[in-house]
Length: 497
Ligand code: NAD
Image 1 (cartoon, rainbow, N blue to C red):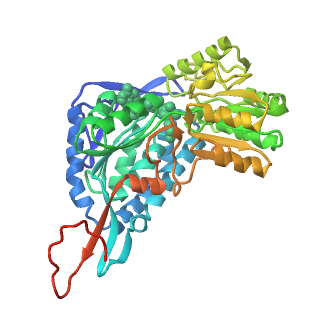
Image 2 (spheres, rainbow, N blue to C red):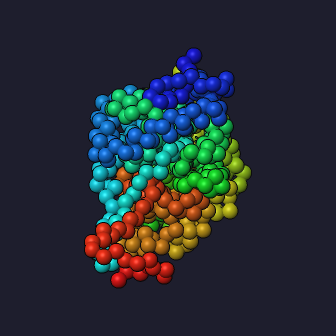
Image 3 (spheres, rainbow, N blue to C red):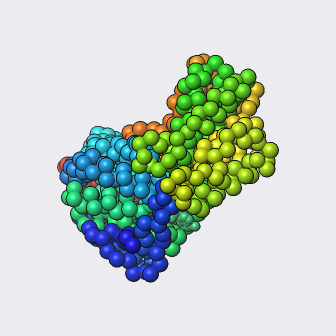
């Protein structure tokens, strides 16, 4: 059986622990690999390598670092088919969707190519007589990224291109459910000319994460995953004096106003609710039907949800692939059972789907609930599967209140032709990423990605200028080059004259 190891100091190395995890092909349900789960000593030796590499990497001119990142960009483009197939084989999502997610990661690499410009500081001449002041941003040291299963290439690429372009060295701890992509990216970085030790991959589970949290040489942690773990990472990073950004789970709403282009809203919802089998933190899992539009919305959605083509990710005709693991399939199925028990109307039931030739794959068809209300657990909790709930409200204000009262605040959208409704929504809604007639409002790499409320713990989002700030610390210098007479000692608080 294929054994997936770690990548430290420029090469694949066998871990010291006997602990291994299972990696499945979700399309067939077969186990295809084992992944080594790191011990604390594996993590500590990767940090040692990264710490050593930091000494020279951080003092390289930003332009030289940018050129390596640029070469990496070319290698991703050259190897995109292979990387996409790796994502499909371990995650299960359909090929074109996987390829799209790789492109969204690539955009961050492209952004990081501009690092000499992005790191420019500020300068003020003559802040006092013959005194100048300037600020500069310097790298932190060794930083770590802990990532979820649903975007094995894109989410790590939200982090490391910017972190290393800023001059840091990096430890990636990918999800143990689909670890291969992280290793392949490490090899491509080496091929691009990245010095050994600058980028390292440690595979593992909680033990590796806890080792990251307590290693004193790791200065910052970027985390993306579920809310309970994000909170754990946030609290323990703070306790161990580390900078932290911890992005958590979501329950995203798409508001369907009575005046909207209903076909646009329905098509938007189909892709946003069922794309990637709902395993996206920006999936729209709640449609909020305002006024009288509910019946027509549900009727159109149900026809499309019933017609969804579910199949293996490598089959070009599949619109939706399997879920990532058997356990996750069971969890999503149990939420559908729960919704029925809670009294929501199950309009389309995708449970128990068996595909000929793929009987052991982790498939579920698209599910659609109508008449879901705010007290139901299927409304309150993140299901992370292809389950769309329709909640009916009377007014725009009621829709906005529903969303603002939810514990999560990752993404949200409104479909309307009314500019006033769109503008008020963007201004007042308590959610970090807002779409207006756009179903999945994922910001581009030169803006920043991040939710509000319990969808993000910490102060900064991923990539864009938030990423630059997160991975650097600010230093401000005040200088005087005296000419002529030296001044005497002063014992009062200095003010500029
Ligand atoms: P997860 O929280 O189970 O795992 C994320 C990472 O944490 C993995 O690397 C995992 O190994 C590690 N981990 C898991 N349990 C741990 C524990 N007890 N202690 C320490 N570390 C632990 O998340 P997942 O199931 O891989 O991913 C799905 C979740 O990620 C969803 O909730 C989704 O909304 C969220 N997500 C959020 C965003 C965002 O930007 N907000 C993006 C993608 C995914």
